[in-house]
Length: 115
Image (cartoon, rainbow, N blue to C red; front, side, top):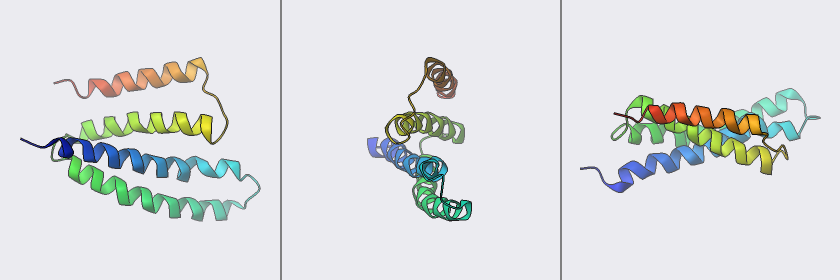
């Protein structure tokens, strides 16, 4: 029987990797005057750390979760991290339709965990 850590560690690693991923993909939006080549290389540098967390998360997680379950979990975590990032870092509040769309995506990802 797997331990609680076997189930929780991949979730925490995926959560942390999504923080890096969100900064890599969207953090440059606050630096619109920076040349595109600089933000591309900065994003690649940030994405390196995302991969350093994401790859072990999936490797360890596959011992207790299926690949579709890992992907569904990653999508839910991405939405949660992005929602906070959008409001906190970018100063762009979420509208009702954004929240409704995110809820539908979470519902779809939840279906992956049904046996």
